[in-house]
Image (cartoon, rainbow, N blue to C red; front, side, top):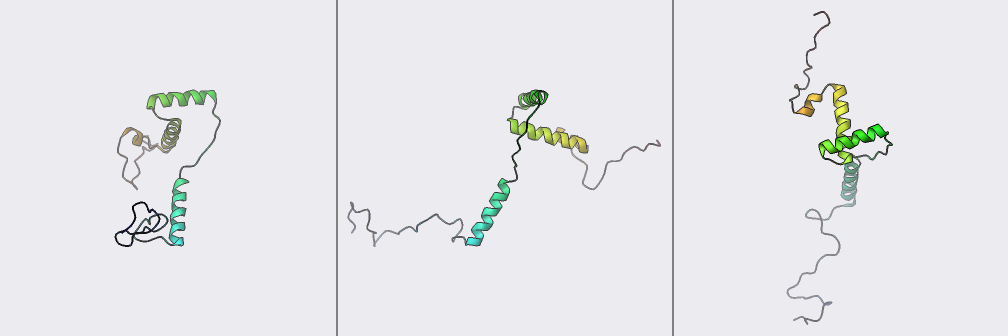
Length: 116
């Protein structure tokens, strides 16, 4: 029997001593290669969102303020949306912004010819 005041001696009858260190993610500890592969994947995912520092003109700052007010989002989200809208409008895909279904992939919309 273990003395209740003894916090250092391992109880041989009922206790199970924990292994030192972090618990493994799976059933066993990862190898060095597995840890590094996971680390690289996590780093790659974090770098998907790149940081950009820019200086805006007063007109651009006013426009950004209006977008934040209209959409009720942060500066980051407003800038992201504005860039996506600008890009999609240049590509002729603004229908996606307003909830319309885009045409199927590989099928280009027909354009009127100049002869007609």
